[in-house]
Length: 622
Image (cartoon, rainbow, N blue to C red; front, top):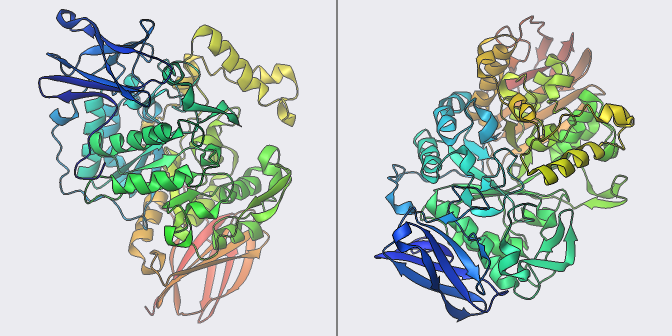
């Protein structure tokens, strides 16, 4: 498969006067396709055995909208593991989709270069009051005004029920029907491209959801019992039959790139993609997805990996997998520890010091092989020589907010002044920043864990969710754990919806102005752009304050961020003279401004903070 001749090999495809079907089913000796609609074509048609467990064949006279299942050895019948649509839910019949009928308007779109990206993560169901693809498309203008360059959609692979984060997806090629139709998702992407926004999809290849995953009914070789993950047997990437499984996930990606014009992927928990074979799945997948992408558009490939594993983002020529970015959580954890005091669970590995925050800003992540108390073993690898934009930093994301018992965002627990200072560090650093929906205006809504499973599974999910917090001091009392919101309750989902009307109210409006200003400076200031000769360094100016300096050629910027209390610092600067470009306490950004006192000399600055805040300095001789 290549960029100019992509044709799907699995699922249902329009083919001349009918539909061609193809499926991998090593569990069966015979497979038939059962047409359920239209009624005049209802019935079972046997598929031809092609070898290696594949079955295929065509049915004339049907087209888009036809409903079908596959029948294995006479009974039972199951939906298609490569279905393009599950309009009646993941347990219902699959639907034939014709992607060629959608009229695209993005023929001039060429995607985004990896450097300079500002990503915005959102959950379609809670981003707008309506929670649909259509309403998300209508809200994209606000993201253009904010200044972000890429929208990252939380997983859309269809899942059981009508509410969920998307990480329990079971139909990797079918957009979640609870948000709308396949063409409405295409229209969202088309509108994003018209506005200059890339669209990245969060995908889950490390497991399938607990309800509605029928892949195992077709082939036991989708899983490898020799490896285990937190969700059970691992996806089979290195055992017998793994070639077909690897091909399946490559085709899943190419399907989204071609049939939905997506611009890239964020791969969930790549550390759980266990592969002891000669060529790691991530290496092969990245190469094949890039080779098979749409002409002229190179997909952005982002990994979520808790190992601080440098080979993911090293160039293939240096023995790496060549991903554009890996999420580096150490920065978030240090900031959260310092501002909100978190110290249990994985936070026990972090001290929350300005020195450790500075180190994460200088080298990408903190752990480069040191012993992790939480894991009981060393963690991390040396990231030397890797361009800093390949590290993804955030101060909020769906995991770090939603995996808290009550879904508290950072600004719900830290002072608004300290939150602005942390935001300044995030958005002036060379690392690729990611925002989580609503953080730009200090949204009041929490982001809770929610689901919509059947009654039996739902009870287990609710009990399991509360049991997760047994080891936390605040939830040692069982009666307190019972106050954790029930994931299955509709109210839990509805509480997580953003309240767009508050954007015009204080203190949200001033926070939104601050984020817009920071992102605009990131784009306009030469020293804040990444080039091959760019340099970034950070130090602890004192126990409360971080000094971040950036330089590109003759251009320089310095960010002094006091994250706690009041502070007075003297800092040495090079390449002046200097001027103040912005402070987080300027009147447009603070309802009760208390600007820090800044005294500048040729190569020195004296900054006195009355409370947490940030000052952005720039050289004026550029």
